[in-house]
Amino acid sequence: MCLKENKITPAEDIHHLISFMSTDDPVQRIVLAYDYDNLMSLCKKCHQAVHNKKGE
Image 1: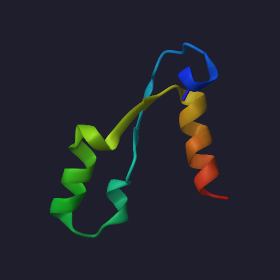
Image 2: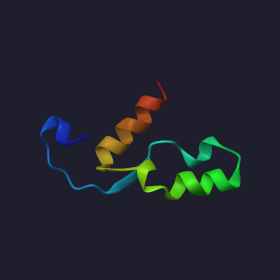
Image 3: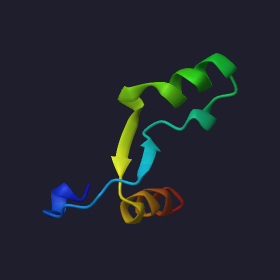
Image 4: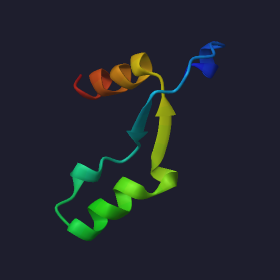
């Protein structure tokens, strides 16, 4: 997200594109939690912005 704004910022947080808490199925939770294709590295500021945006 930072690169889209031409910023270089260390990634400190991992964001799940699809929350592993979005399902009650324990197997699906594990799949979502550890699937590399479901993860995004973000700086703390961008990670907070993603989660604040979801609450709107």
